[in-house]
Length: 551
Image 1 (cartoon, one colour):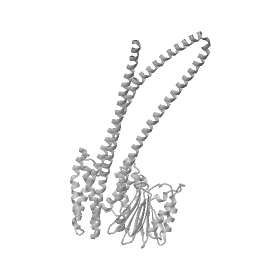
Image 2 (cartoon, helix red, strand yellow; image 1 turned 120 degrees about the horizontal axis):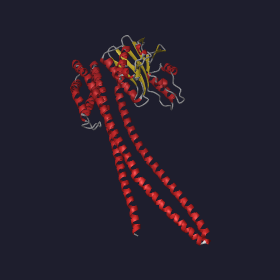
Image 3 (cartoon, helix red, strand yellow; image 1 turned 60 degrees about the vertical axis):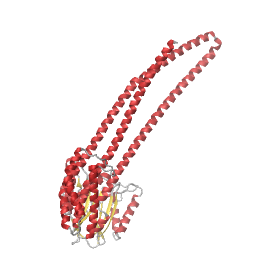
């Protein structure tokens, strides 16, 4: 009895020790897993806040330029009603600019910007920006309270804004780049921590394999070996019994054979059942992992969609409003249909005492990349035409080409991003149209004839090749009263149907020609209908923009 008790203790103690080690290892792995999940969630939350801050800081540059644009337009207003309308738009942009600036400096729960978010370096940049921001703010507040007759005071405010704008934009760019750099550093830090946790988890698993599973397998092997010995002894006793009992020998042998078969079948069934349970557990674990990853992907998709929706609102704010176009153009329509939420196509218009300028452009790519290019295009057009008073179409395109290549450092990086542009300038007194194009033509319908005027085979922006040495040219067209000018990107022409057949230039030209005698609203409706009938259930290939204008 004492020997059996010692054997029982010997078997119980290793099992208890292995169970204790196994429990500690599983607890440690669970802690590592929870820590990794916590770090991943914290990284995602930080990236969400970083994305909002970077987006708002980038928007500040466009808002400041919009303040300058509206201030310049205020200076050109000569009537009280127009001045008040423009002043209302100026006030709206200015208030958003102030609110965003304050939120970036001190935080804003409404905009989801935490307080004390800024690093010492960013705070120093905001401190350096303070004189320029205060100067622009004071001038803008003074302009808000002036009237149309106070043109001298308005001009003083405009001059102050213009003199401080460049430094403000430069420092705003530095702040945005610093935000991006700090966000990147946070992500890299989290990645390193997660890598360390993963390595520790692997070490624990190796430790568990050597000091838990391996001893357990050895114990099981010893147990089966003991059973095998006992079985051998039992077979010997049975054989001895059969020698003494001849009559029962045959029956005993048959019974023994059946027992062996049943045992083998039981062992096989046990093995199959164990394997099935293991596979079921693996499938369950894999399914849980897929569910977790799917939730992460859905969360990221929602965040990306919100960011793109914010980019759309910014783009809509930059594009000329219909009310503005009605003040500039006699009659017009615009068919504007982005492929994705944000468009790589854009349109732009401006009027001074002598000319009316209109631009239709197709930027490289679509969606968010195309949207960023369109914002660059409108911003530089404002700087070139409004800020630098360049009014010749081909010279404006040359300057725009230089600005894009310099801003994107394309001569250093061999970048290919750019845009195709159709640019027209209408001279009011002479009723004369000057056209300069970058790979895009215009159609002019007058005297019952539709004429095609082609632009240069050269893109605005992109790495400068030999063909860029040929300058942009101007084409002059005398317009009769009621002449209709069509400007468009290639999205309509390149749209395919379910059979992958393009709409094509000849068919587009004929559709334009057949409808040019109708009112512009009907032309717009018929173009849209023709596009829908051709496209049907096929997906849209590119951004689509078509404009018809009577100057």
